Length: 249
Image (cartoon, rainbow, N blue to C red):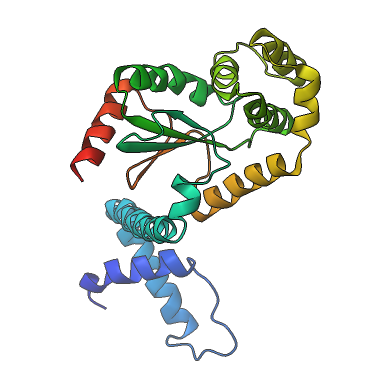
């Protein structure tokens, strides 16, 4: 057997299971002795040329990324209204801005808190940004409480100040602290608790979960700028570059 065939055999064995037994319904192409010889040759080849393993992994990652991107584009087309124009989703900045940024976030997420000053600064400097904020509480029950409280604050027309106060809060954001912050920004906390139980609040959070699943968003924060999905925290220069790119498209 020529060694020029070994890379192909190596990749085949890597992705079908090294040394996997042949099923009962398959006719073995090689005798057991021949199979042992092939495995030995492949093993030696991989040890002498370990770069083929990283190359195989790279190709697999590229394929998975392409598949993810295709699914995200399909989701953008199918769910555009829910992503960008859901009337129950709070909007900050300029509601008529020429560039829309959508953020999926959790108030207890350290990376979301890290990104918050950059977002606030961008809205201050660029008065033509429309920020759609998707409550996406994925870090436990306390995150759900904070998200419910924030959405309920909209009924008292105080979503924006409460939103920024929660993101700027230090330490563990438990229910007691959420309510303290609510009082500090002028919310009627008794009314807030009642509004948090409203079915439309739960429905809004469930819609965010559904959108995140369709877009294959696995963590927070995640941003959509124009038609580009950007996972993870971003700084001010990166945000400005994304906005500039969206304006040109």
